[in-house]
Amino acid sequence: MNLVQVAYAQHLPEAELLQSFLRDEGIPCVARRAAGFDVPDFLAAGPREILVAADNEEWARRVLDGWRPIDGDGPAGGEAGVRAGTTGRPGAQPTPTPSRRRRGSS
Image (cartoon, rainbow, N blue to C red; front, side):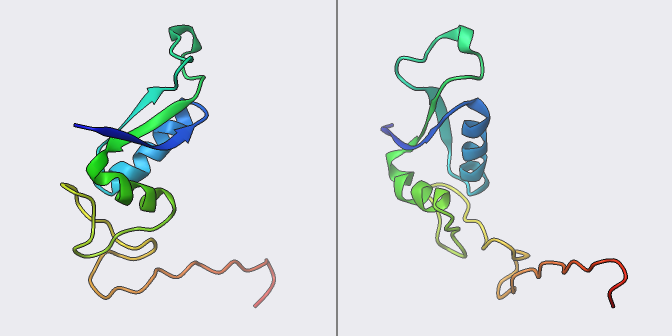
């Protein structure tokens, strides 16, 4: 399997966040320490590269850019997600954001 880099994270927590975005869309991925930073003493510190299979590169870049696949679109070998803010049902409308009111206003 040929892996390609689709993102660069400054530290482990950021890498795990990016991986969660990809995994939520069914895109298998892996994080590895960037060249020159593979030192166990760094623990969670140090940059990481986010890698996906070459077949999923386009989908991964779209997901990380904020685009979310719907219906039959999606990554190779993965499950397609739903648009952000919808319930996942076909034809569903975005979930409205609750309005905030100040105390004492009607």
